[in-house]
Length: 474
Image (cartoon, rainbow, N blue to C red):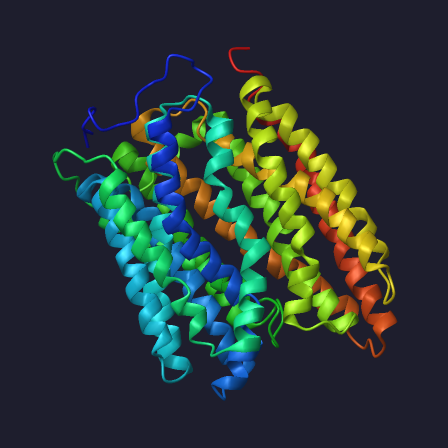
């Protein structure tokens, strides 16, 4: 797909300066992406409340999140083909419209099953947007200032954990649950208007053929694996049929896709030969492993404050703000250092800081001072923000423009599977170590054990950072 060069951001005279047109394009995409990020983080505190208000079991209400997550992961591998077929601008506006329709439908849901179905519609739109946003910006940046560009792209990811749970808690405390979804509408409408004005037009080109066999192998394989991971903490446990069967089926489909893709080469839905790029391969592994450090502990932290300390959803969300603030503050500096020194040293320092700042949570009790924990969370947020910027930005080092869509898809899928795996593993550890706990002190001990595992996962990523690219041009 060829782009109209008269509308694309131009290369500035100063190679270290981000072109204003690229900043405008990034701002446009961020506005739309905020709807997806806020929706995900708001829902993280709303499941229990939704179960009560819809007179549904907690297991049924959990499908409100699970269905969305599965739809998100299912569509991600196809985004590269969709972009080539429709063009980036049209696909972005269409995905934003699909997410808007899904949000409006969710707000009109009359019971739990209808809400679950409408969340699938949302998930398809959101999955396209999260991959396409990175793709469009990286293609426009043409390989320059990747660190600084990633610091801009990750604004929604940084804002979501800060504001999303607080907004969700406030909505549930003050108003109707339907406003959780209506809250997305202004971002979708303004985002679509800005996209129509600011995104570059695509020139029509030859429409690529969809790799149907690859799609039938890869997307269900990813969805089955993620579904199995989300069921590990269920009543049947890791050895249950609801875990084992989809996990084995999913892995079999993924292995089948690997064989198919090696035969198809560049015509496959996702060209697995891209893993020959050491930067993309090492980044994908680190993004996967960071799931335990980011998503897993984001599950543990609010549960600790709610179950051990007796906080409500809004109170737990407010206590998490320092981590989000640290993440926001580290973005710009981490991106600048990545462009100057390369991803490797920044990632090593970031994961080391995250690891050190997770250690205190291994000692939590039922009366640990909240002020001290919030201070540690601020430091941990600085490390997490720098780590995510560097390992996600490293995925695009050395990729050709035509390889960026698939590279973006690989990175996002690794993030989704890693996040699900990290959350599931820490949930099982917490469940095993907290079984029989009848007092806040005993329950706090179980959380401490789970946090020690999270610390170990973070520490394991540090030596793997040595595989990332070093100083640019070095």
